[in-house]
Image 1 (cartoon, rainbow, N blue to C red):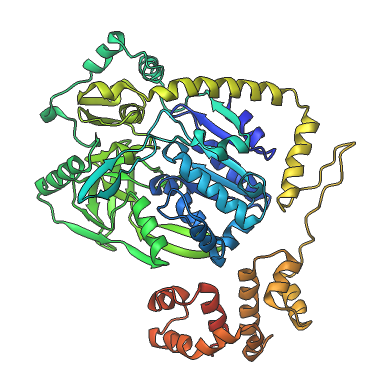
Image 2: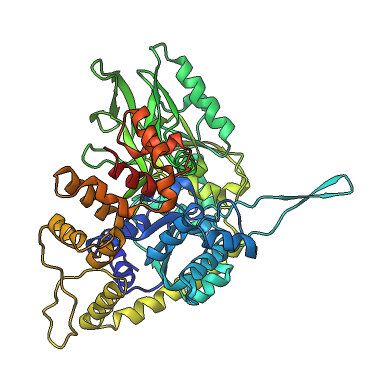
Length: 570
């Protein structure tokens, strides 16, 4: 199936499992769909099974989004606690589309738990409470992390290892009736011999005829090319290489500290998923890799380079990429936002030392070249993930490998054939839809999701909701305020976020249209009792920003409460 065919299926509102080989464009297709939804005023919930994957798509982990945290399953008391959490309930209730990236690393138990949370909060018996659910990933890649449970019995600790429960074995998967979209195009690898080798691993038919390609790329450690990352299966090897290589440089070190703000647990989640370290130590001559996309500046996540100089004006590094482009690197933000409101932010240079990286952290990246040690591979799919990061054999350098490096999970071999057949059936079914039928499905879904669509001038087509006439947005808010409406009532009448309405009211007060004293009608008795304490905090910190005050109270008051308190602060 092509990316465009998969995108057309997504637009119908169908529940979808989007899969395909590494480099087939899964994330690109999802990003296209996200852009499409936003064009129609539908904000999707963008999540992933890991923090690293979440940063690649600008989302948060599914564990954080759903409120389940580190738990794989919940008892009734724990479920009740989540669904009565106003913050989580509001997040889930507003969602119309839920995207989960790197589904291969999410266990069946966790997916069932997330599904139960959505169903309970939305009070809807449909799968995931009626959300469009989009699962993205490749089960040939890294599987769920299985933790051993420790049971104390007669002063003896027994380790009980549970079998892997892949997400496709969950009841939530079965109930969701997912349409499988198996992408077959290849955008990363352009080397036929290398593609054949990777396909052989994927079919579990790796043989000596492919081994000679890898043997030709095997090198001694001291002959490893400079300036390209090394992939290892264990963190200890990565840290050793990066520290050793940095210490060898005689140039002056320069430290760059990460700036953090927002809710502590969300900041921690951002840090865990961010490939840039909390403290980044650089020297002129350091091999680095960009950790974020910035197409305007000419780099993407995975672009390699060397620190050529440290600019004397602002102390930011200048990196020369392998293509010869010189880029002055400034800090970038990783954020968590909800309904247009910033919940957490970290800011750091989008760089990390690139002499070495773990295979797990490389998943989802495209590397121009890499040196790998696959001799300590311990997980099915780990070698396949590592090898498939590079574009061609000429960019691959190997220290060694073990037998597990070329093995994929045997259960996935059977399941993958089922996915391919299901995708072929879906492709045939959707190919029979006429353009009018497909367009109607697209528009039905947009309307059902509360989105906005352009008028369609197609004969025999049902009436479409039209975009609102654009008028002075502040005047409309002011008119409703003068009629005695609350911020919540105005937001519902105007189909805008309540946070947006509060910002309108605050700006109207700044222009003298509204007396700040009038905002008292927005303040609840509970918040009223805390106003003096909150106002003192704003004055002590000499700020009107919410984040410093939020940090001072350690989350005692929500951002909404702090915003309301600030509105009546003279």
